[in-house]
Length: 240
Image 1 (tube, rainbow, N blue to C red):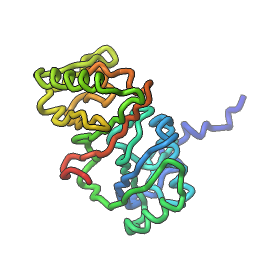
Image 2 (cartoon, one colour):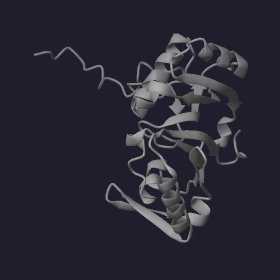
Image 3 (spheres, rainbow, N blue to C red):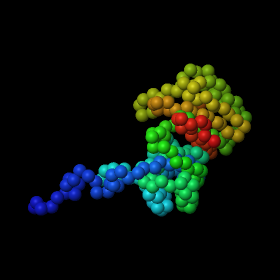
């Protein structure tokens, strides 16, 4: 019997990995693009990738509390698997006050294929966590898209515009969107379909949902690429 030994997980309520009490926290907002083959990694794997990038860049991460501390990072919106993005948002926290330009340069050195760092800015912790307000999308046309399909797609968009609400089922629950306010932009252009989705307090539509509602579910299988071109956060004007 090991009566003389103590379980390190039960011998104390305080994690040995905690940063010292009072360690300062500084929050930075990173905007980045996720393209190419990188669009096929899951959101969890993306978070792991960012943690590894930060460690390679020797960032002084601010860590969470507990026996398994993690770098403080937050994505306001998880990108669906297979969707590219030109404007993703990551909020990360450091324990040192770095100039935003220094952090930008340190992150850009990594040069991860498919990952482009667009900008870094320091934001106030008092502002709270980033909350998504709207998303802009572009969908390239299928390889075999023709004039007949253009006519059908335009008609489907017009029918949707005449509806007050549209809904899809997700995990056994309905997700309802008010067309006029939640999908203010939906347009078939010569070489692409564009859409803007405004988010609410609950679940919101995804770009694949829009395609499904229009009867265009098979577009990705036929060569169309789904691209998130912009994210607007609450409290900011449309990001460019």
